[in-house]
Image (cartoon, rainbow, N blue to C red; front, side, top):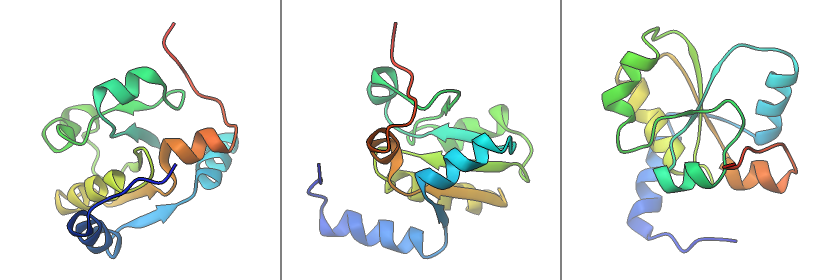
Length: 126
């Protein structure tokens, strides 16, 4: 389901994406299967996270990630893979984390929607 995003929003997303590395949902799945160590961070809103998420994801919503990331992940060289609903908000958050000095930040293009569409495992509330 495509969203109707405003031009100004898409402009800032495109600007952030010019500086941010991206990967696919398949890349993240493969990294997990290979046992690669990384922090998977869900930057969606609280209500989105509570409806369903990728198993093991750390929730640091886009509204608070810059404030709280250092206390949760103090190692600025750690590999961070961020996702949102489709890959736009995660690119914006990844750009800011890079500005804060985090050196290995990747935004997962396709986001949670792409993960679900691929039929990969998700966690839902009990």
